[in-house]
Structures are given as C-alpha cells and as structure tokens.
Image (cartoon, rainbow, N blue to C red; front, side):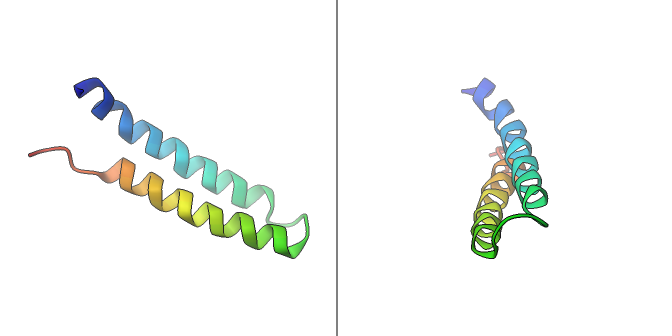
Length: 59
C-alpha cells in the first residue's frame, strides 16, 4: 500500500500536464464547440490531478 501512495502524486502531476497540453493543443485550432469541450474536460482533469498531487497521506 505504501508503494501506491508514493506513486499517486506522480500520477497527479501527469494528469495536470496532460490537461495543460490538451488545452494548449486546441487553443487556436478546431471548432469552438470542440475547444470548449476540451477546456471543460481539462479543468476536470486538472482538479483531479491537483487532488491526487496534494493529497495528505500523513495520519
């Protein structure tokens, strides 16, 4: 269980970077509805990644 707790912040950072990369990739190209959809999904992924990254495992 300890090994999984050490990997969780790494996965959170990966999710944050993926969300930022997706938002940057569609920032200038594509239809507006697609950009808005990607932005909304990026916000949700960013929030999940933030929770995973900054979760406090100390008890």
